[in-house]
Each structure stands twice: as structure tokens, then as C-alpha cells.
Length: 320
Image (cartoon, rainbow, N blue to C red; front, top):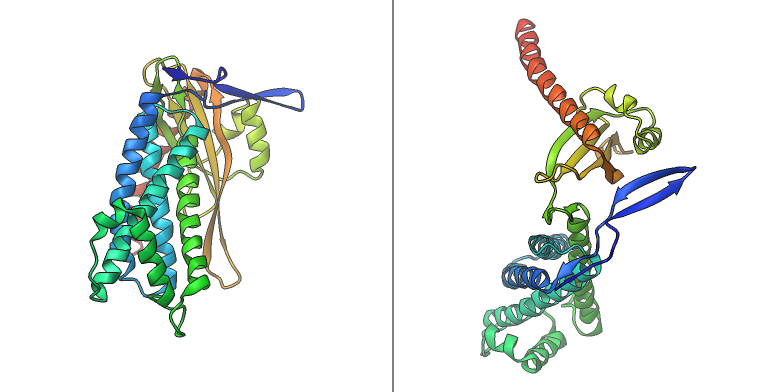
């Protein structure tokens, strides 16, 4: 059985012009949710085990935070692509599965972590599998550890009691929140052809020079005016540039979307190079003619880059 919401696009009326963007239909099946849940929970279980084993080896707070972020992001990505495999196009269902998978990963990480802590301190315990099967025993073990603490913030006494509960709570919130965010973004960045029951694939990717007015270029593209885009030259990753992605259905060739990201490269007050990415357009629906224009422009820029590279090398050799 497939559940759905009728419209796969969203129409935005601005200044009298109708801009049409792709929007997930909201459809999903029980089988698809099952596939996503199995992939997500399996990945979360493995990641939870590895996270617990590795976290006890980290004695720096900054690396501990990075490990927690990576743990949540990995669960979100794995679960998100599992749901894509299951052809789920519903963000609410995606978020629910993400929350369940991250909770499972956290729970198993606690079971493994408690076992590792007891082994390190030479305390006899039933093992992480028994902790995982018996939440009551696991809770008592965690409460026992909380009374004494296992590490400290800075060089002070071991963090314990209420302060340690806050730290553990923040860790859990980070894992669940990051997992849900990453999973949401994974699904948002993919378009699905309802006619062919298949996900669109990357048709072309262009790196173009940054225009003087990105907002104006966006309005022109939404109004089906592509002249300004075609005048842009090849971009350079070391300077401000546009990254344009074309996603197309390879089966019917009728669904095409364009996404555009603007990258600003600048120096901060400390003269450090920083990069800021801004999502300008996300899945603007375009026709086959515009899709072909992007492919031709991508080919043109690629060929120009291949010609320019040997010329640059030759010029560099002549100056030696």
C-alpha cells in the first residue's frame, strides 16, 4: 500500500510570475519505510558500537564533540539513503525513522560504553549484550557511574551528578538532532519522478564565475531568462563562484530540476580564508530545452578547461 499527497510541485506567486519548484509528493509505502528502518537501525547499531569503543579513548573535549557530531551525521546519512532506497518521499516519515534509528544507536552505545568502563576499572559485569537486553540493569549501571564520574572538564575533579546528567543529555540531543537534520537534507536534495517511480540522477554539474547580482540572476532563471547565465565564464574554487546542478530522470527524460549554490571566498579579521555557501535555488523545475542548455554549457566549460590547462603549463615552462 502506498500513501501519498497529491501534488509533486509547489507554485510560488511573486510579483505576478509563477515560479515552479519541485516538491516531494509525500508518498511512501510500508515496504519502503521498512527498508529505510532496517538500513538505518543496522547502521546505527554498528555506529553505536564503534562510537562507544572509540569515545573512551578520547580525552579532549573538542574531539569528543566532533565524534558526537560525526556519530549523529553518519546515522542520519545512512538512514536517509536507506529511505531513498525504499523510495520514501515523505519528510515526516523520514524524521520519525531518523529519530528511532538515532535512539537505537544511542541506547546500544550506552550498553557498550558501560561495559567498557567496567572492564577498564576491573568491575565484574554481565557484558554489553546483557545490558542492551535489560534496560533496568543498564539504568542502574549508568546511575552508579554517574555517582563517581569517569572524566573531567579541564583539570578539575571528575564531572558527576547533575552536571554529568546535563552533559549526557546534551550529547543525546546532539546525536538525535544532527541525525534528523542530516536525514532531512539527504531527502531534500533528491528529486523523484512519480511517472517512472525512480529517483533523478545528476545530469550535469557546472562551476561558473560569480555574477554581480546573484539575486537578479535567480529571478531571471525563475522567469525562464537564461541569457545572463550563458554569459558566465568558468568558475574558480579559489574565488567566488556558482555551482549549478542538473538532476534528470534518465528513464522518461521529462523531469528536470536545477539547483544553484553560491560560494563566497573571503578573509576574516585574522586574514584566514573562509568559505560561505548559500543555497540560492533548490530544484527549480525546468524543461528539456533548458536541461540540454545546461549540458551543453557543462561540456563547453569542460572542454575549455582541458584546452587552458596545457596552455597554462606551457606558459609556466617558458618562464623558467
